[in-house]
Every structure is written in C-alpha cells, then in structure tokens.
Length: 465
Image 1: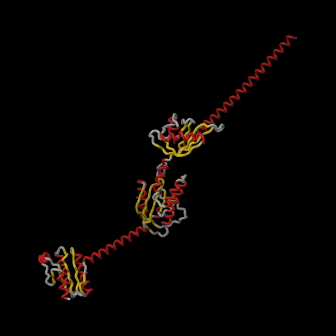
Image 2 (image 1 turned 90 degrees about the vertical axis):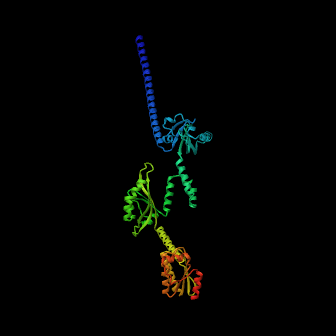
Image 3 (image 1 turned 135 degrees about the vertical axis):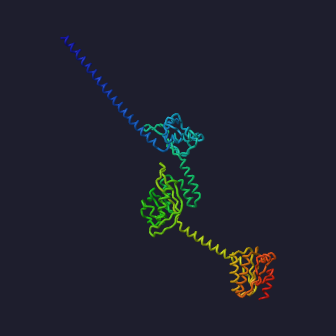
C-alpha cells in the first residue's frame, strides 16, 4: 500500500510539474506573439512613416522655392531640386557634406553666424533678405530667407533648422524696371511708386494692370490666334461702336475692319506677327453702327505662354488717326497758304511799282528777268498804270544783271502795252554794256524814251506830266 501511495504521489508531482511547464511555455508563446505583434505594428508604423517621408520629400521636390533642412550644428540634411538649382548643386548627393555657410556669400557668413542663427535658436524664426551664393560661379543670388527651428512634436526639443527661401532676382529686376518707368510719370506715378512696396501678390498687379488698360484712351485688345476676341478695353469698344457693358469674348475681330483691311490682316499681317512677333502700321477700321471707315495706327504683338513659349494670342494697341489726319491736313493747307502768300509777296516784291507823282510811276527791276517774271512785270505795270491813270511809266533796269533777247522782248512788250493805255514808257539804267548788248541783239528802241540813269528819267517824267 505504501508503495502504491508513493507511486501515485510521484505521478501527481510529475503531472503538476508538467502543467506548470506547459503554462510557462504558453506564457512564453503569448509573450512572443505579443512581441511579434508589437514588431509588426512597429514595422507598419515605420513603413507608414517611410511612405509619409517619401510623400513629404516628393512634395518638397515639387516646390519652386528653395526648401532646405539642416542639423542644429548647421550640417545640410536635405535641399530640394529647386534649391539645388538655385545654388548650382547637381544632385541630392552633392548636398551631403555641405554646411549652412556654404550657401551664402562670404560677406554674409558673419551675419548668418552672429545674428541669424542665434535669433533662430532663441526666437525660433528669422525672416529677411539675404544673398545666397551660386557655388560653381560664386555669383550672388538675392533671396528672401525664411528660416525656423523645428521641434520634436511630443517633447518640444529642438530637432533641426529648416528654411523656405525665395529667389528675388526676377522680382528685383522687375521692380527696378518698374521704378525706372514710374519715375517718368507725374503724381500718379509717384503714388504707384509709393504703393509698389505694398504689392504682395500677382493678383494685385493684375488688377492694377487692368485698371490702367481700362483708363487708357487708346484701343487695347487681345484675341486668339484665329481672331476671336479675348479682351477689349472700354476705349476700344467706344471706338468701334460696341456696347461697353456687353460681353465681347469670341467676337470676330475682322468685323471691325473694312473688306480690304480684312484681306490685308488675314493674308499679310497675321503671318508677319507669327513670324517676327510684331507688326506696326496703318490699318482701316470700321464703326459697327455707322459703317464709317477710319484710319488707325495698329501696333500688334504676339503673346506667348510663359512656360512653353508657344504662341497663345495676339495683343494690339490701336490709336484713332482721324484727329491726327485732320490736323495734318490743316497743317498742309496752312503750309500751302503760307507758300502761296510768300509767293505772292515775292512776286510783288520782284515787280514793285512806285508812284512818284499823280501821273508818273517807277518800276525798278533787280536781278534776273525770266519768262515768268516778265509776265509779272507786264501785269503789274499795266494794272498800276490803269489804276493810277499814269501818263509816264519808268522801267529802271539798272539792277538787271544780264540783258538778253528775252529781257529785250519783255521790255518791248511792256512799252507797247503801256502805249495802248495812253501812257509813255521811259527806259532808264542803260549802261554801256547794256547798250552794246541791245545793239548786238538788233533790238529797236526807237519808239521808247531811254535815259542812262533813273534820276534823269524821273526828271523827264516830271516835265511831261
């Protein structure tokens, strides 16, 4: 019996030990399963974090601004593609081993180390203009540097330094050009100059541009490459007779041109614009309501997509030339009137008729006597003799440089015509060489009284009247 009891006790002890062993193993298995589950959860978390990191990096790579991350010691960890392009780094691998001072101009390094980084570490943020350095060329790059301190989301401990930096070169060039143009303006330009510092978005610039275009007195319009209106300012609508408040989009621009101008526009102007980028010249427009055709100064230019460089439209600034044409015609008429008046004055001065008494007149001739002047001499002499009832008309040729057959013929005609009016012609100023020339020409002055000087001719005339 005792042997049986002892044997039973041993079996129970073995069973209990085995049960405890099994329980311990089960507990270990459960612990391992929990450990495996925790590892799987951690692995999933790491995978999710890796995916989020890849998405974040991809997003940062798409950003057009410089985006960079550095350690608290200033060692570069990440720079996106736009940032690498800005400073001339060829690849992401080239970022490794660089430090923050490498990215700025040498003269900016003391400012970075002594001012910017301390403010970042104490205040958590710094913003302002800075000059980056293009590493291969050493060229300075003006930027707006916005940097901040990155903290651990749970502990709040500083983790890294980050920046989003904007390239200011294009905007600075635009600002300089805009400033140059604004300085040429009056008080409105001064107002724009003062307001330029407050322009923060492209939308504000667009609104200001639209306002300026709408206020312009010239026709300003934009159309598609096939001639469909995209935009036309108020002055342009008024010029062509289109309702100022109506929607003009899609309107065929050739409808405001005369038929001949339409053919010229389609066959000649459009090809030139597409080839050279611009065209300038006169073009005849037509008023939509009245049908009136009128000349314009048409200045057209090609509009291209800023990203692709492909043509997307045609812009035009058009000025009504009617007033200018009228002014030019008036100036031309005035010039012609002045010329006619000057010609009449010169004609009168070239054939002066001077009364020396109630019945005697003198016409001194100076210079050259051609056919046209001979006619004026005859007309002036006859009209003067008839108007004054003169009995004696003195023709003084002292100042005539050359006496040829034409001059002699003119003198004889004048003498005959004056005699028909009942007056007598006295020819004075006949010098020796003139007398020889007249004899050589065979001119018969037998019926004409001649005197050598004007004084003797006047004495003769006074005795006769």
